[in-house]
Amino acid sequence: ARYARATLARQTARGPRPADGEVLLSATGLTKSYAGADGELPVLSGIDLTIRAGEVVALLGKSGSGKSTLLRCLAGLIPASSGTVTYKDTPLTGANPGTAMVFQNFALLPWLTVQQNVELGLEAKGVPAAERADAALRAIDLIGLDGFESAYPKELSGGMRQRVGFARALVVEPDVLLMDEPFSALDVLTAENLRGELMELWESGQFPTRSIVLVTHNIEEAVLMADRIVILGSRPYRTIRDEFEVSLDRPRERDSAAFQDLID
Ligand code: ADP
Ligand code: MG
Image (cartoon, rainbow, N blue to C red; front, side):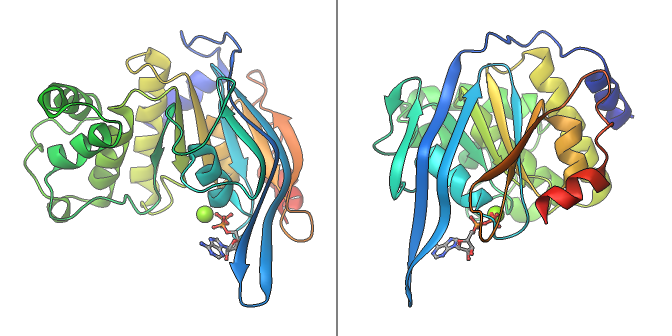
């Protein structure tokens, strides 16, 4: 039922999100190589990308095309080999202060409770200990984990664990929420529910995140969630191959088959 509502929401106008178009995040001439046994392995070359307030952007590409690498560069978790990433006109020199990340494998610490895991997000952003509990409890409530504050990750289902992942990211109120295949470790129904709830939450304005970057290899997910789809080519392109606006009037016109050709 939630999924149906989310689908409907995409066929009508976006909710009350600010679509003010301010550039929040940008990559210019971004290149990234990893050191390998045979020298440098180029993974990204010449990426130009702009993320504006109010939009959901999906980065779509097949496995190994460099989606996670690009997202980590945007988060400032790894440095670019050349080119720049800027957050609100300030070039990054380390972790991006305007972003928080949700990971495919949840990346929870198993020896910490739900609340402690969520508070880690705040700790990472330097929020004093005394201020962490209230914010963490609010995020836990918002994401539907009320009553599970003291549970440990191993006591939770995959969907619930990823809810903790979302709470840990949202608690810091990032301008840009970065998600790396956040639903791909979940079964289909759990993924659909969580997707729908997240979009409802975003459209309701209950958390102040202003734009979302979603990495996915799931074409339908990209069409369902994103306003814009950016396609990363793999060898030998290693750069942005194409870009599409997802039309609100006819979001499904570009069906999966049309995209499939583009990401091969
Ligand atoms: P995707 O998320 O699209 O699957 P990745 O960004 O994870 O792609 O990886 C792109 C390429 O970079 C792959 O060939 C992968 O093996 C390589 N790679 C990723 N991370 C590292 C790393 N830390 N060291 C060396 N090579 C890496
Ligand atoms: Mg990846």
